[in-house]
Length: 171
Image (tube, rainbow, N blue to C red; front, side, top):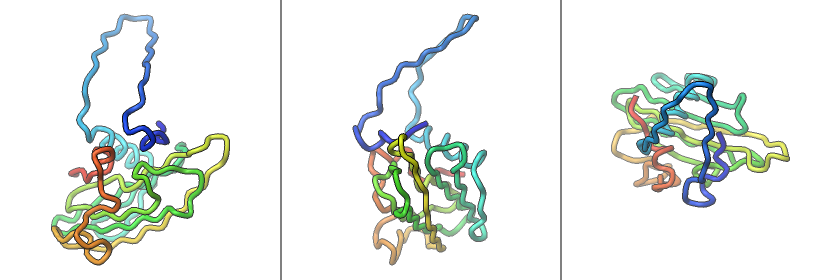
């Protein structure tokens, strides 16, 4: 998978799928829900990524191996409190973010997971490097990000183009 095109066109790229088989196949085109990609990326990060227990009730999954980029998923298993997360990848090079920036701030609600950041290698003829810093704290539900970004739950805001990939998903 590659996400370098994510914010360049505003529309999904056209594609052609070719399937070769010695047996007859039945193919149906299905329309996916907007959060299907987020659910798939979350399962990929949980299944193949590195797991880090940041604090009680919070797990961060990092995917860097066998991937030309970086994925970070935060899971909040706390039933009553949000987790505020600041992610800074600004020292990374030759990568592009699906959120259009290398710095993000998010409030992950109780009993939810979220794709915080997804970076893809930009120019494939050159190398790339990933550097990230994660800061997290417990937050109150319904109060936004408090002093980190008053009145907001996500910085940058989750626009229609990225909402399906980056919105919090229930456990």
